[in-house]
Image 1: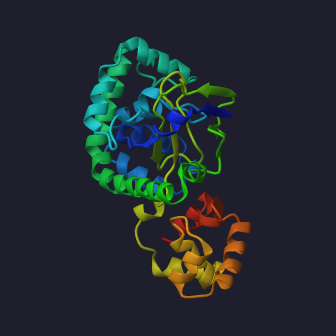
Image 2 (image 1 turned 30 degrees about the horizontal axis):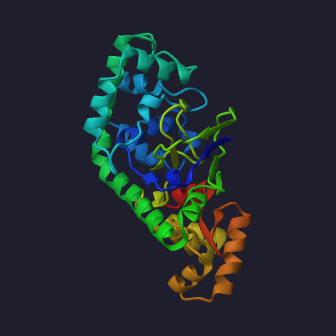
Image 3 (image 1 turned 60 degrees about the vertical axis):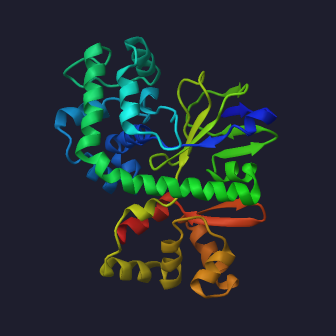
Length: 320
C-alpha cells in the first residue's frame, strides 16, 4: 500500500496531464505479455507493426517478468498534454548514472542478447528504438489515443466540478481510496510506504495500459500516479454482424446492448434514459452483468456508476 499524505495546500495542486512517452513505455507491457491485456493487443500490434526486430527486442527487454518498466519510460508530463519530441529529448539528455539507477530499480531485467543492458551503448539503442517506435506506428495511432485520454480528463474535471475532488480521486480506480487528505493506492509493489507530499504538485495521468493503478518506482520525486482511462472500446472498430448476433444470443439482447454502451461510467438512471426503458428493468440487467464480472461498480456521491470490466472488454472484443 502506498499512501500520500496531503496538506490543505497540496490538494489545490492536484492536476491531470497526459504523456505520449508514458503511453509508449507502458504499451511495452502488452508486447511483453499480450495475454495479460486482451483488450489492448489489437492497437499495440498496430502501433508496433513497423518496428525492426532489433528495436522491438531492445524495447521489450526493458520490461521485467512482473511488468515493471524503468521510470525513464514514464516521465511526469510538464504540460497538460506533453509533446513526444520534448520527452524524447529529455530522455536522451539523461545522464548515464540516472539511466542506470532507473534501470536497476526496475530489475530484474533481461538483456537483449546483443549488448548488456547496463551500458551507454544500450542507452543510445533505447533512444533510437523509442524514436523508431514513434515514427513507424505510434505517431499514427496517437491522435486516437490522445482523444480517449483527453475525454477521460474532461470527465474527471466535470466530476470534480459536480461532486468535488475527493469523489474524483475515489472514482479513478477501485484500487484508490481517499479520505482525510490521505490518498491510498493499492499498487502491486510489495513495499508499504507513507509519503508526505510537502507542497509538491501531484500529477494524475490516465493511461490505456494499466488495469489497476501505478506509481513511479522511485518515490522521491513529485507524486505521480497512473490510472486506467475510460473509453478504451472507442479505439476499436464496429462489431461484425455475426459476432454481434452471437453475443446477443449468449447473454441476451438487453445485456448485450448494456455492455456495449458502458464504455464510460453511467448510472442506472442515465442508462434508462438512453435506452428508453425503466430504471428497474436496467437495474436487473446490471445486477446480473456485475455478478458475472462483466461490469465494475463505483460510487459517485449517492450514485452508483457502472462500467465494463476487463472481462467485459474481452467479451466485447470477441464480438467485434
